[in-house]
Length: 137
Image (tube, rainbow, N blue to C red):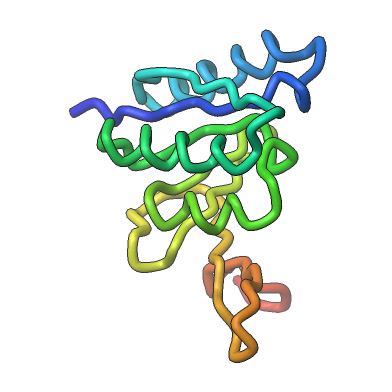
């Protein structure tokens, strides 16, 4: 069964590299056997509306992942909001941003968004026990 994903990029962040960034999104999806249903180009003149539209698209298209060139394409707070709807994968590193309960088995590096006691969002990198420094055989 094919997994459908949405690509996301902001042309103002990509600059003249926007076509390369778009190609990287498609290449990552193809490498994983996924189909890109659409690429959403965020409008820098509407920052708050960009994440709302992207979340709406992810929800209505029923995708499990959104691929972006890197985290620079998100405004502060947008990544954690989007991860509540779909996992976000950065094409530059392959890092997957997710809410732990929504995660499926994957070989991607995992970054969990965790809310601390002071209500701030912290980032925790999940490391498998056999990958921890000082462990192994």
